[in-house]
Length: 129
Image (cartoon, rainbow, N blue to C red; front, side):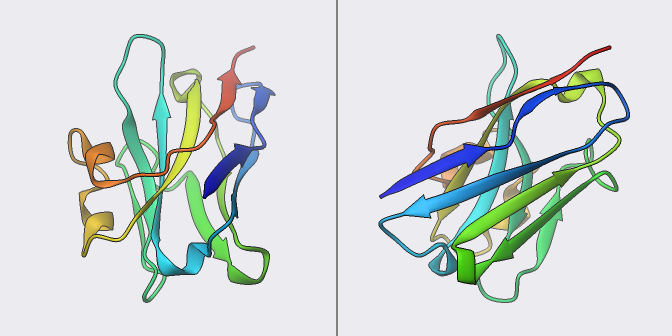
């Protein structure tokens, strides 16, 4: 059971990136999937979540209107499209799974990462001119 986030890189302010979260050894469709980020010296911050049942999406206020989460069950992959990137979006981004009910509604709450597991290797996003 492994998650792998990819697609990060260096981008100028206002630019875009698309992150991918691929699973091996299990099916992502059985889980709510959350994206988190961690900047140096800070705790994990919940960014976005997509539910397994009806694919309802949730976003932290800091990224609402700029980021879009989606899932492609055929490819067993979840994506995070990030537009209008800002320097404060700089962090390592991780994806994670949860089987708890209504967990996506908690994505913007403090320590929301505690409701998720199977954090895989993250991908670095750096927004700088």
